[in-house]
Amino acid sequence: MTMAAIETTDLTKRYGEETALETLELTVEEGEVFGFLGPNGAGKTTTIDLLLDFIRPSEGSATVLGYDTHEETDAVRERVGILPDGFDLWERSSGSRHLEFALDSKGGTESPEALLERVGLDLADAERPVGDYSKGMKQRLAMAMALVGDPDLLVLDEPSSGLDPHGIRTFQEIIREEAADGTTVFFSSHILGQVSAVCDRVGILDDGQLVTVDTIAGLRERSGVGSSLVVDVAGEPSVQRTSLTDIGGVTEVTADDGRLRVTYADPAAKAHAIHRLVESGTPIVDFDIEEATLEDLFSAFTGVEAESVGEGAAADESKATRRTAADGGVADEEVVQ
Ligand SMILES: Nc1ncnc2c1ncn2[C@@H]1O[C@H](COP(=O)(O)OP(=O)(O)OP(=O)(O)O)[C@@H](O)[C@H]1O
Image (cartoon, rainbow, N blue to C red; front, side, top):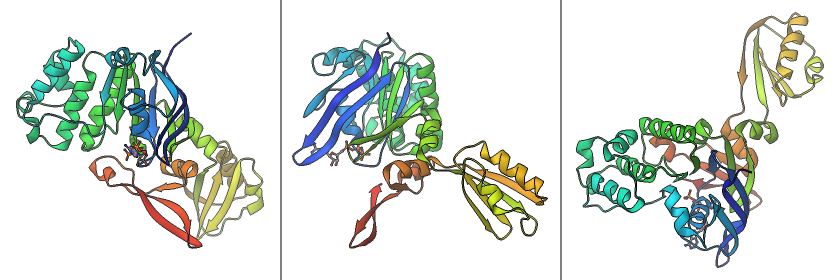
């Protein structure tokens, strides 16, 4: 039997009246790259802090790599590499000193140079005090420290914060390399594109509740958010609308100004639709497939509308709005920075 890298049972954290995490039941298998997705305040950091015993649960328990997070904290921390959210560095010490410290305390045997190269920090920068580093450079150093000692599990809390697009690619490469080497990777993010780029499975957390866990493909299928076949036709389509709506898996057909849009839940439906159009003698000028985006999926599962979730620094300014019924109307409240 394979051991789960992370297993939580009934894991709950309350702060007074506020429930930061509600009866979380989560299993992350060994070797998986698992994305933990959710808007600000969803409970991602709380979960990670519980897994590493930085805070104690109000109820429930968890194991990491088979060890109880509370009873066997040292065993857990020895085997886990952590890139925390809002980590502290010693501003006056150099990057190299930080790495030496991490190597000493973890008993790591890696060469500092190799670690620096992996995260894209050059040797000259490594000699400068960390107080002079940009946010992205600090993030790279923290990743190098997390990699020390060849951890069995990498826990990354919002790893891309402060990184430029190149840095994001570097981190994605590291995640893929670690996974290829058998390391389990658990990382939290509110940026969907980054999660989909590397993850085997995704868990969506919203307001302390695990809303769903699935592969991206599975989320697509279950969300009911359809993809669309968009066909440009010369003149009016000569096809009967019902001959398209009759196709199994088609959920909606609209026609607008020489453009026909067939929305489907079952991908097999699009070939049928093309076939019927050709059969009816409709002159097709061009066609395109518009896939449901990850943003659409996220909204479908959380009711939170993500607006801009591209890569890079700009993504950190991405906004999402939660639709709340207020004063009988719909108010938009910002929930993602
Ligand atoms: N020490 C604390 N005292 C009181 N409430 C807290 C404390 N720590 C976290 N919370 C609350 O718990 C909830 C979950 O916070 P958490 O930091 O886990 O969210 P998150 O998903 O990591 O968000 P972010 O993306 O902003 O890091 C929030 O409502 C937060 O205000």
